Length: 238
Image 1 (cartoon, rainbow, N blue to C red):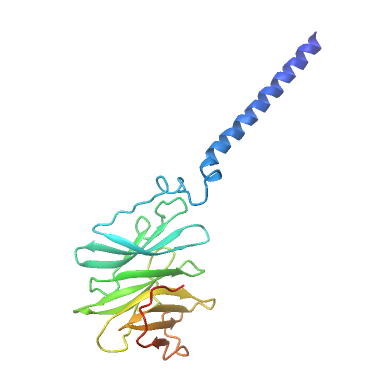
Image 2 (cartoon, rainbow, N blue to C red; image 1 turned 45 degrees about the horizontal axis):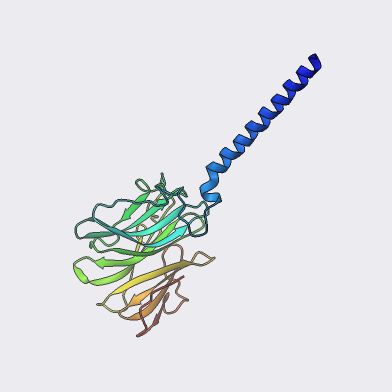
């Protein structure tokens, strides 16, 4: 009889242990179910709030580019109006869960006044292997509202301007004529660290090649700039 009691007790412990293990498995499946059973194209509810992340700006802002780093952080090129009539470049960094990344700018956002003219519009960005961020777009000319040029900035992994790029981390590319306009639409980087900035200048297609410090690579085109005259507006660059 005593042996039978021990056998029944051992059997009960085994059943309870199995039941607990099964419960743990169910809980784990429930915890990952949204990503485990989501169909391709479904919104990832684990990102931000219900798959969305809204970042407030003082007046208005819009994004013109998005890149990801190897850790799943996202970087967006943003035009942000800090106050009426003052548009600036901005970079927004979110972690893989859609939260503003700590340690980058202020609450995951860095704003850059490139030209001081109040009309800087970010168009595209690219990362390098060291975590630096390059942003390009259209920038104003102080005192000449109709004169627009191509600007490029370089930020480090914390969102600070890199001083050895251009002048204090900012670069404004020269126009081919004393008057007119230009805008960038894309930026890319090759394996040697050179930058390619594509855009439009007075209705011509232009591509600039710069080294990692923003200096023109003079062997490319004419003094680092290739121009296709009277071409269509550049709309994409990868």
